[in-house]
Amino acid sequence: MNFLHNLEVALNGLRANKMRSFLTMLGIIIGVAAVIIMISLGQGASKRITSQIASMGSNLLLVFPGAGQGPVRGASGSVNTLTLEDAEAIAGLSMVAHVAPELPASGTLSYGSQTWTARVVGTTPEMQVIKDWPVSAGSFFSGDDVRSAAMVAVLGKTVVDNLFLPGTNPVGSTIRINKLPFTVVGVLSSRGASMGGQDQDDVVYIPVSAAQKRLLGVNHVGLINVQAETPESMAFVQSSIESLLRERHRLTGSGSDDFSVRNLTSVLEAAENTTAIMTLLLASVAAVSLLVGGIGTMNIMLVSVTERTREIGLRMAVGATESNIRNQFLVEALVLCLIGGVAGILVGIVGSRVISKAFGWPTYVTLSSILLSAGFSAAVGIFFGYYPARKAAGLDPIEALRFER
Image (cartoon, rainbow, N blue to C red; front, side, top):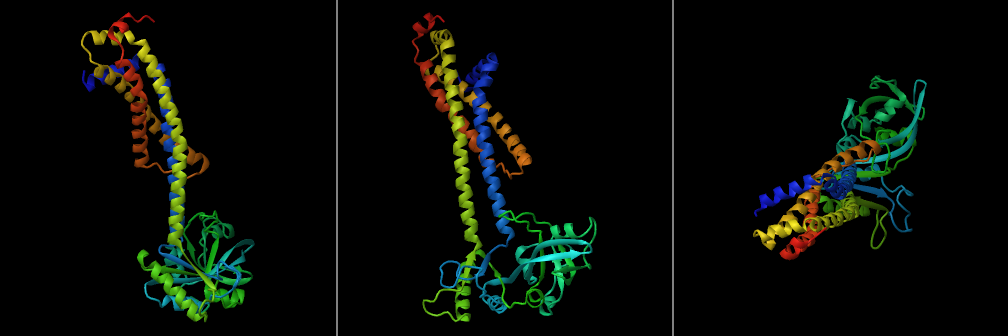
C-alpha cells in the first residue's frame, strides 16, 4: 500500500464523514488563522515603527542641549548650550553629509479670517534633504534666505488644510506667524503621524536666522540634526561631534558634557528587537490554540480507529502489514491537518486585512509566517496522529475481526 493509495483512502474517509471532518479541522483552521493574524500584527507594527524612524532621516545623529542625564548641567531641553555656530562647526567634520539645526516654537498662524496654532521650526534647507521630504508645490527656502533672515515659510499639509480653502495654492500668499508676515514659498507633501502619534504635517518651516532674530529673539538652537555619510561612519562621527563640542564649550577633564548625542540607528535596533519579541509572544499564544486543535484531531482519530476496527482486521487478514495500517491512519491525520492548515492560512490572510481596515492597525502577512503555519500544522498532524495510527497498527487481527460495536 503506497502513499498515493493511503492518500486516496484518507480522502475517501474524510468525504464519508464530512461534518465530523470539518469540525475536526475547525480547531486547526482557528489555530493557523490566529498564528497568521498575530504575526501579521507584529510585522505590521514593526514596519510602521521602522518607516517612522526612517522618516526622521537615515544615518542620523541628534545633538541635544543639556547632559540628558545627571543634575550637573540640567536635563536636555532645560539649558540652551547649542548655537548656530556649533552646527556650522559640525558641518566641517569629516564623514558628515548634512547638518540641519532646529529651533522649534509654537506659533499662532493667521490668513484672512482663519487662524491656526502649529509647530514653527527654524532650520536650514538641509532639513529637507535629511528628512527626504519632497514639496508638493513651490520649493523649500534657500541658503540665501537663511543668510538674509528672509521672512519666508514652507507649510505642512495640515496647516494648509486649516488656513486655506480646499483647492487653493498657498504659494505666494502672505500668512502671519505671531503677527509677523511670512511669504509662503512651498508646501510639503503629506507625511502622516509620527511614531509618537504627532501629526508631522502640522508644521511650518522658516529660516533659522529669521526664527532667532525676528520671531523669538534668541541666539541658540534647540537641536542639531547630523547625517553621517554611511551607517558604518556613525560611531566615528558621533565621537568627532563629542570631541568638537567639548572643545568649543571649553569642557576639560572630567567635566560633564552640556550636550547629548543620540544615535537613531541604535533606537531603530532597539525598536526592532522589541517588536520581534512581541511578535514571538503573540505567535506563541496563538500557537496554543493550534495545539488544542491537534488534541481534537487525535481524539477524532482514536474514535475512527475504534469505528473501523473490523475494517483493520480485514485488511490485516488479506495481507496488510502493521506499517501499512500505521501509515494509512498517519496519512489521514496529516491530510486532515494540512487541509485545515490551508483553510486557516486563507482565513488568516482575510482576517488580517479585515482587522487592518476595521481598526486601522497595520498588518503585514509574510511568506515566512505562511510557511511556518503550514509546517506547524503538518507537524501537529504527524505528532497527534501517530498515537492513533500506532494503536491501529498494534491491533490483533483475530480480535479485530471479532470486534462488535
